[in-house]
Length: 331
Ligand code: SAM
Ligand code: SF4
Image 1 (cartoon, rainbow, N blue to C red):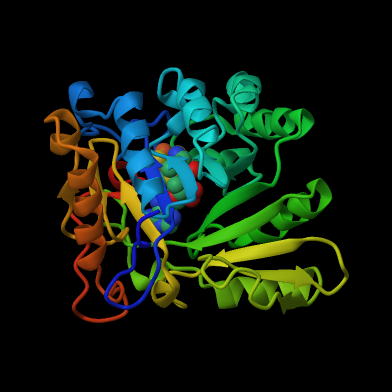
Image 2 (image 1 turned 30 degrees about the vertical axis):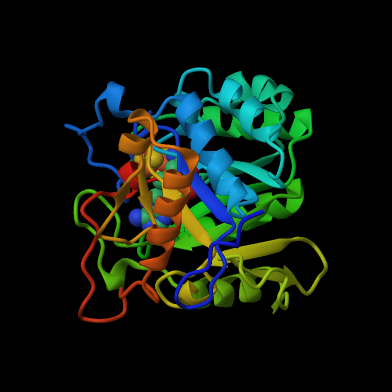
């Protein structure tokens, strides 16, 4: 086993997020443009074999946790084939998928059979009309059906990801969390980040974790922070004082967690990123397609991690949004 992937701030990187496509079947306004979406050409997208090879090298450097994302990962053809390859790779302790849930009901069985258990389903609201406004598609029922099927099949843990946008989702917070408590699903609120394709983000549009905690504590039951469940996980978790359920907060804007970051990201077109907000990317597709030996790929991963900055600068005047929006990076 090689030395772990440590950056210049002594952070160990064992977590790889892999975007399997930049395509998506819905159009959330905080991520994608409404139309004229620019996608990466199909031949630029990494094959399953290329992804698997990259993961093997990353595992040799201490990566143990994988999350597949996108775009919408379930629009990638034959995704269960990749899941099976990755789920059985020696050294992988944790494999998860982030999905918008639209195609989940149809694919859940095949994903389960391939070895997937951990799911994050993106759902901001239980209101069909608001779902349509946010996603510009009318697929609310499909997502709910996807959740039903996934729970019936025994996926777990299942979490719901909800993007916290001010002056929009306030009416959804309490119903969504009540639904989660009834169903044994943790809802995780992700503060709206400046990664949307249309430049709509502003600080005033961020519904903060603090505001949500206040609402939930008042309307449902007081929230108590769960201390140090996993200090390197981005979400801060809280349990309800009445003993029913937990909620999580990914408060990238108001409570940045960069100092504990353990992640690297591979885009669908084979670029390695040390941060969601990074401006620079390292090309690994060229290495994978150009016959580079594993050692060279490993050295490239190491040198990318070495370049990692201390953290994003959303809260300073110096912040510059990355050139690609969320769907193209892989959320
Ligand atoms: N399509 C899948 C989905 O929606 O879950 C996976 C990719 S999506 C980019 C990953 C996550 O990013 C989603 O759960 C969504 O909640 C989150 N997201 C997208 N745009 C965001 C933004 N501007 N700020 C915060 N979270 C965002
Ligand atoms: Fe698609 Fe996910 Fe982006 Fe929504 S957040 S547009 S579901 S990639």
